[in-house]
Length: 164
Image 1 (spheres, one colour):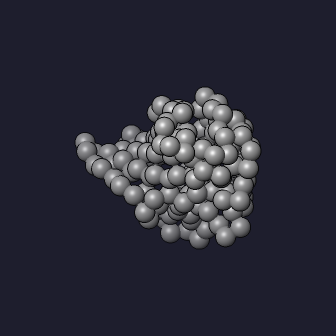
Image 2 (cartoon, rainbow, N blue to C red; image 1 turned 90 degrees about the vertical axis):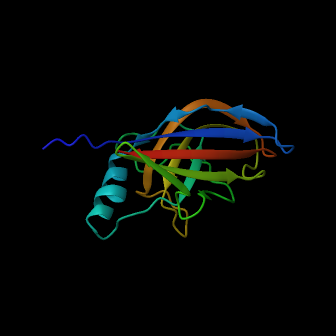
């Protein structure tokens, strides 16, 4: 059977100075859902299988794009704040049209989330755990053009996942 169901996503990252000036903008970048993301977040949840996960946080990193079978975000920035919760009950707004559903999540990494300047260049969506481990919890992620982020700058994230 072939029904044409698709899942895709995209994200946008802004690096923001203390005065609110946007210093970096990734533009909209297409996302990659991992094999474990499909299994743990979609299939397990759909069929009520133990171990199913729900996205509730986002991470930034200095590495490459996650592998299709990846479970971690390469070079994940592990600072004192680690991963950041995404707005509302995970995805804080949604819209539907023409047989598809789009979900939007928003997050802010506050000024000081980095202890020193870093060149951030990837992002990932996760189910955050009490220990912020990087075990098999990566849903999706991708790399984007590298941006220098100083310790006194914040990072705003908008993430969209579309089902249809």
